Image (cartoon, rainbow, N blue to C red; front, side, top):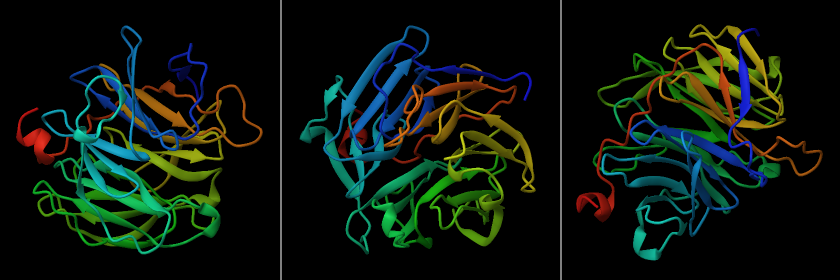
Length: 311
């Protein structure tokens, strides 16, 4: 595709991530955050000066958002946590508070993909970490602004992924990226209540390269999915038609998010495969493709004692 530029973010970084995931751009900081799940790490970089910060969590962190006070809402192994980010380093027990936890129906589970809807509710799904089991014990949950965790709203998921919301908040997207599924669904979304209905197949990724991993929705309503194992970004129109395809220099792109001063950059994280990795696998990329995104909404509530105290 013409007019596309692809650059490695942090080109001087030598250490790749095992499972880079969940990029999130904070416009008030002009900074990109993302995680390395098995390393239990949250990373932050400001592109203007290249400053890096890194925090290590008590358990694996897979997805996150921020509230208005700057407190982190993190989906981890044993639940959702309020986290106060102080100086880079190891997160202290006093800066870590569990605020909600589902009843996991199987051992070895954790949260996976998550983000806020445009009204500030946090949505996140769960999965059995051992993907070789192909367990469908995963489910999708909603954490509302009052701090209430819903019952499972979508169940029977193997590897939950691909959450996204249309610019008009009328459609929610969700995928299952497991090799036995490879599907993206659309739902009718009620912005006032957060209710979802009318689940339907949006894209059958068995017809395209790769598996549907993390996703982002642009300002025109296009749904961008990372084609894990397919070395691609794929954009689908609101009608589910493929209209753009960008080949990436990594084998397992994992999630994308719009950012930059004008939200015209797609930041793409990646996973480093256990065998056959190339020099770019496990790094983050900045892709400019002439499309603009929208800011991610912060969590609309306040999370735990840190936010309540305004800290």
